[in-house]
Image (cartoon, rainbow, N blue to C red; front, side, top):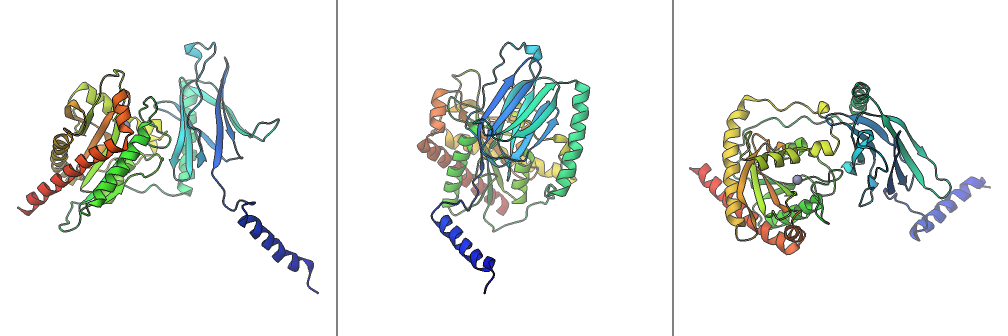
Length: 414
Ligand code: ZN
């Protein structure tokens, strides 16, 4: 006679299989859901609560310059809007939190970043099991602290982060500088959708910059690929944050011949509209370009990147030489874009400008940053989310790319 377990196990397996096929047991785990984010502000502390569909692991740490509290979590489905940061009866000087954002950070990781208005301390952080009708809750309590204590906690957290990073994947070093030497290969174009994930970028009435840039980037990639003339790569093809330096490294890793970073601007004066294009320069062409570069360079801070953990800039004697050539080519492409886009969309006056954008700093890849328009302008926002407008403007960019490589090829052949 067979032992009972030997008979029941196959039967159990069959039952499970049937249940799975009828959808009664979920064989695949869906991402956990953040049902709500709440902020409770009192005189003595600020409590951040995440309502969750299930228990998750988390890590809280502090970052400085500027002061931030970061909560790292597994990939989660986040609500589309965050909580109102209401401060009932709290005077400005007692405020602990000045901003909050969340979203996908890297593969498998999402992040909530809290801007600290002054030095704070994480007094408590814990997960509560469901009770009295409430779901799993992640609770983080912030209380006032001193600049000195904040700084020393940042240092401690940084050491822990480094130990964690050493255990997991090591950050890849930037690709070595190599002068390009390819004659017959298809030109390589890397298109970069600005912002993403935890960094939403500029905000229109409805549209978010991170979505506008991704939609446009996909359209541009589609049209470029359709010509059959180019190899096209995207720095991101989903709602995820990519650090600025990594975007540059992606272009260099692919040995790109052209890097196009796509953005959309926002400005207080709501009547300002039109497209503009930027190339790298240490001295900005005007105040507006300088402040725009500062704003775009904030991207890593917004996403909660620790600069102390970044490897130092690539240093190479060849870079200086290549940079001049790269800058000339970038300017050449920018001029073509201005010419070709003129009849397709509104242009900002002095359309081509210069400033120190971090994402344009590949020494060996001609790079431009295009601000498609202003999300703060009603007409621009409407256009930016329209597929026919995207098609038209992407078409103008394809024409510019064609012109750029035609010219470059002739120059190389001479
Ligand atoms: Zn941007």
